Length: 200
Image 1 (cartoon, rainbow, N blue to C red):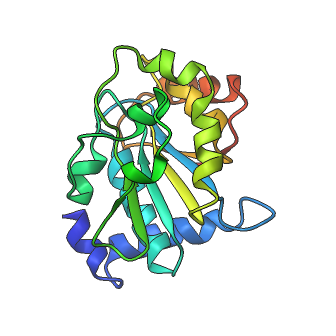
Image 2: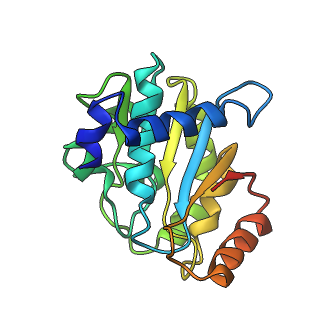
């Protein structure tokens, strides 16, 4: 339903995400962040839908944007974008060097995707070598913006690690969803690894 609503630039959902994009333009000294993590306190709060929507809104403004599925345990970007998930981020983090071979075009203007790829035995181990930061820098040479759909923060040891690779993050919070203490705990974990939090 969100995808259909985004097709109409005048829909309330489309306007809401365009407002987020406009506000993001004031978060850095150079305007819209070149790299951005979208996460949530827990699963099911709408972070993948929001990542996808933000990428589409940015692409609609004439920019080249890459949506990366960084939630390797519960990937969803390939479903949203209508592509398969045979290979992707996990392959690149494991050492494969041909980045472009894993990037997929979509039907949406300006938007490409890098799916999660096969689920690795240990996502935390793959992320601990800082390859994700190098990869985001490399992708920034091809794309104007890189949006990472990250895993939820609570309950996962590696979730905040993606925050080190980007300029900042957005925390998606379901209305009347998680307890305030859970939100505070998620924010504390992001700050612990020096993640710049743009907003919620």
